[in-house]
Image (cartoon, rainbow, N blue to C red; front, side, top):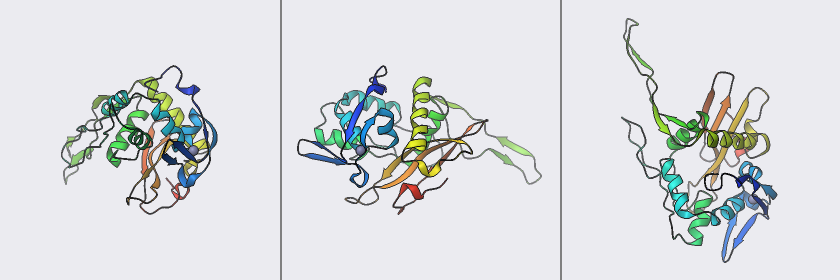
Length: 237
Ligand SMILES: [Zn+2]
């Protein structure tokens, strides 16, 4: 989206369930063959083969810059609580296996649930990241408000256009892809599923690290991830 803003939606891919590049293999979840995928379908279905194939066509240095702009390898605008920085190591000169792994979010790439939630909130907020805070106000025993905490903006993680287009992609995750567990007529939801590797060498556990629920007043953000759940379809908001 950022490197090919004019034509990224023209991307097409045929998924057999296992993507092969030389001696390397990248499997889709349970080796499911997704068949012919356009860009939106590949995103909605979390098609690993398509993401691996896309990654090989991107500039690894620019990919690294995009990750940096989203606060990987960086301090978060967060005071008073300990946290780990998210890691993104791929850069110019990366070998094929690192590109394939990084493009599907595995390898040495790591993101904390908090950071994931912040990026998702920025998408819901037109690209602007608000500084997270934990207390709304401090009230005395007598009911008097002693201190009130006011929301403040950190800055822009992406353009408003990128945020809008990501929201549309995340809506497709719910309406036609891996986020079907939160599909409902009661409200509009937008989400992106992801997988967490809890044990090295075992198949990653799926979850919904970013879920936006829209009502006429605002987006609400939920983070759904239960260790040990075997299927994304079992998760509920
Ligand atoms: Zn696939």
